[in-house]
Length: 334
Image 1 (cartoon, rainbow, N blue to C red):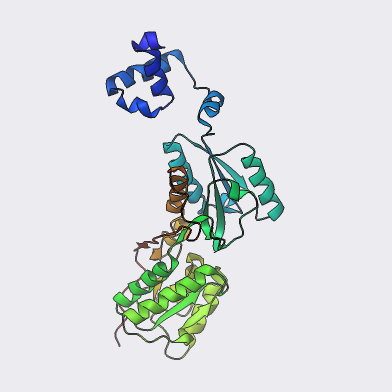
Image 2 (cartoon, one colour):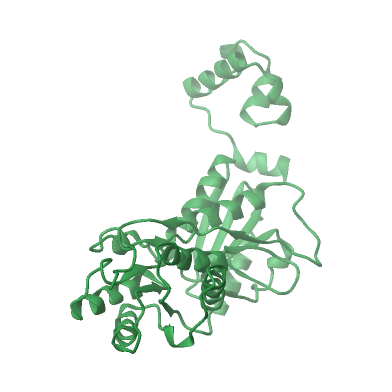
């Protein structure tokens, strides 16, 4: 290979093994080596490289049920893209949330000396990481631990709830209903906090009669929005804490002979494209940063010097941007 490329064996080694010293190799020389590699059909021996570098060039992605959920699969794609850019493979293990399967999965990946583990949850929540993760660099995705030892990345839910409510307030609405999720969930608590902050920003008093707690499903959105609109002094705008509940809200509004956004404006949450983009009218919503969380986790694992202070572990929040469509308008006068 060195003879074909017209360079020394050392230069070939620097290039094909991605040795840091290879950064000094001129681009034209590197190109000749790469052309020789292709011409000879050379494949690097990863087992030998692993013995030399003590790195497996593999990241494990262990999850409860993210791998079987279509829209959350973006988390895996984000982690994969970041790992691939650093010449690492991503191995995915789906445990369905069974503790014994989680522990077995962690033991399986640790026995293969992976370079790091991403442990992801479908719903944002506090977790107790499976035993064994303390022995390898780990990042928690869409979940967090209060053990003070593990870095995590989660959506900026308070800011997301605030942004959703502000969209309606900026359009001129002052009676803004909120169909939140289950009150026991992390996301619901943070989104309610954001809703209240946005009201305060605009000098609007908090009215608990305008707040409902649903199940994130369409039927609860339908029931709660119908109840709100049939009550005294109904809201002119609704913020739903999931796109599914927003779909239920659409049905309730139209059943009552009202229009969107002429009579009632609606904002959702999640940006499930198959629901939000194709609703009639298309739904303004808040994007959950699934891809960005996966990418951040893999990049954090593969960047050196991130062991951090055990007394204050990294808990990184990623913004939830608004996706503006056609479901919001100023309130109807009169």
